[in-house]
Amino acid sequence: MRQTLVLNASYEPLSTVSLRRAVVLVIQHKAIVEQAHPGLRVRAAAVELPVPQVIRLRRFVKVPFRQRAPWSRRGVLVRDRHRCAYCGRRATTIDHVVPKSQGGGDTWLNTVAACAEDNHRKAARTPAQAGMRLLAQPFEPTPADALLLAVGATDGDQLPDWLPLPGAAASA
Ligand SMILES: [Zn+2]
Image (cartoon, rainbow, N blue to C red; front, side, top):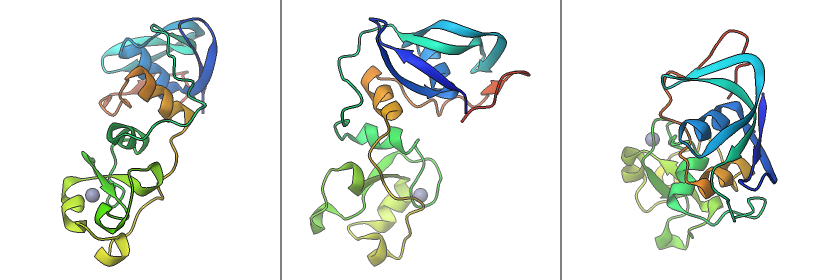
C-alpha cells in the first residue's frame, strides 16, 4: 500500500496515512500537497489530484496522535469506517458490545459501529445473548484514525468514484 507522510502545519512530521486517506484530507481542505509523485494522478469525487507523497495540514494540530485518542461516538464510526460490526452494511449508530445495563463502558474495546437495525435487534444484550456474531473485534484506533479525528476530517466513505488513474498504485 502506498503511504503518504503527513506533516503538521508547522512542518513537523506526524504520521503516515494511506493514499486514500491523504486524498480525503486534501479534498476536504484539511491538508495541502507538499510533494507529489511525478506524472501520477488520482481522481476522486470529481477532483483530480497529483498522487501525494507528502501532505501538510492547513491547521496546526495540538493532539499528538501517538497518544491514545479519547473515546467518542464519532471516533468509533471513523475507526470502523461506518461499517456495521454485525452485518457489514452502512452503520449510523454505535453499539455497546457489553451493554451499559450489564456494566459495559464507553471504551474503544467495548463499542462498535452498528446499523440501526442490528442495534435495535441486539438491544440490551451481549452478542452471545442475542445470538449475534461480531465480524471483527473492536480495537484501539490507529494513529491514522486518530489523525482524522484530530483534524475533523471524515473517513472518505463518500468517495464513491474513487479512481486511481493508470500508473497510480491502488490504495486501500
Ligand atoms: Zn448491521
